[in-house]
Length: 395
Length: 181
Figure 1 (spheres, rainbow over the protein chains, first blue to last red):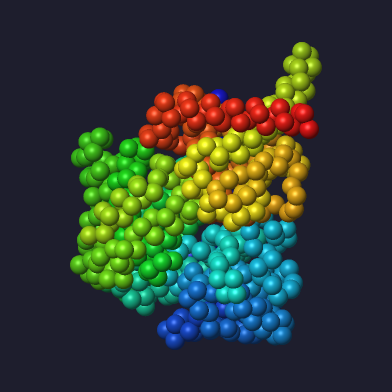
Figure 2 (tube, rainbow over the protein chains, first blue to last red):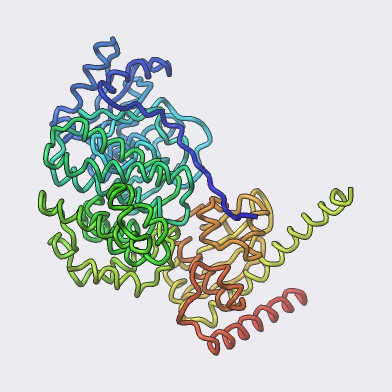
């Protein structure tokens, strides 16, 4: 009997495309919510991205009762407690998180407090602690990369203890993710590139790591295809609404894929590098992806070879001998990185970032080995393996 | 008819097997932490006094070990002296049996959602490395290759045989001491 087994879960309603924001009032009403609160950051507000959200609600007679726009890049337990206090004071009954990973994670954590009660978010950390559905929660992503709108995880820093708290529960998933191309139209080129490569990495690791399954495979390959076909077009024409929507959908699809089949060593190294050198997550993903694929090559030759179809299209795929497709996939990813470097100097090596010291590589390797995602990497990783990959990624 | 009569016995035998394997593994974890430097180095990063549990949900067989410091473990049997810090929980006895009978690797069991981690994930990753190292030592290579993601290339037969003999001797001694007590 086959030992294969998998679980797949994604109950998030995806509302995507032209005038998607205008569906928010209807969706809120459907959940009997009348007093929504927006959680966002100053950058999103300054870019005017709240305006269409607020206008869409007001036009339908739904007032946004409160706006919290001071979410920091690395959200903390005290921020979550403060926002929960405002939510209660203003008698809100729903949350709309507008922003990137930090605002979305903050929204998830605030929803725990306002639904379960109390001021101490730390006591809800861990897996499976939540036992009941939470308040109505909508997410409007303003980057196309993290996939946080469809993941059942939130990470919040406990500044007193100096540790990151992880919260995992399917109840953290929003009721709806609203993917509107207007939200990503003004993303600067280097963020567009880094976040799209984040989505590309989510999809590639979901498709090649240990917990891959037929349903996550479908989302992963579709996401790879969308990023491959649209990223450079969007880099050349930032106001390309259709291309922006493709990237935003790719991010959501990659998020659905990796939240069901997990990620591997690229993320282990990326998390460690982010923590030690404070490099943006998407940049780390783009940087490490080809080196880790080369390391994993013999364990993932078949699925990686299949990805060539989605990376380069049917003509290149059919013209490439089956035995060379895996290597050709890595080359395609390298080629894409070179193009991005040409357009916005997105670093391809640790040295090019200018923010990593060679003396930090050992520390990064040690920390990567303790990262949870390493468990799902298809190939066992020793400390020496991690050091070798970092040496290759250095320059 | 015969199948109906046999099935409860099979299920009971499976539970007994998991129970015995946990007892062996708990003692072997203590033993390997006394004989292998790699395990000690991995365990040293765990907080002193950390209580680690591997159990079957909701209240099935379990093993509990404590990191007593300097990379050494102490096996506590099935009862913990205080609340557990890190727990790896099989969702069902059938899933524990798959792993403990080496039909499914520990990493595969995580990937297949057979197990949950309650506690610090980085410590769980370390404990999984320790468990893999233990299995590489005490199982014949052919079986160990089914139990771990990758059999350590640096582990050669002489080292394996000597370490396995020392681990088994310590496990047997611990069993005898438990029976005597």
